[in-house]
Image (cartoon, rainbow, N blue to C red; front, side):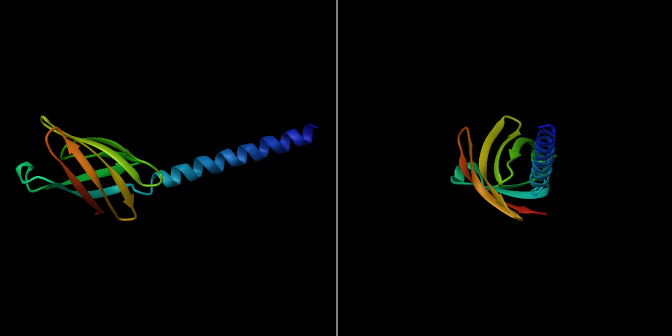
Amino acid sequence: MGQIRKTVVAASTALLAATVFATAASATTFDGEWSVHIASSSSTCGDGQTVSIGINNGQVSSAMVQASGHVAEAGSISVTLVNGVKRATGSGHLSGASGSGTWRGAMCSGTWTASRN
């Protein structure tokens, strides 16, 4: 009985270690610097803007604007950007070296596209 228990514990430990390693490896798939072009669906909201963001361990940040958000292992992304009194939330999907999605602010909305630098 003791040998079976040791085998089960060893197998469980190995499975846990493999899962942690796979999760850590997947979380870094999208790490790096990205250029995000933000386009508005209304001409009154401006021509659009390009913002640089960084992704580190799945967490979104930016030196250009206040940014927070998360990229999931499969590439889905949700982000909030704040620049002064302007605030926008966006969501979408990253795949390889590109991505796209939609965003919404208080009075404007539109789409975004991203490319890895």
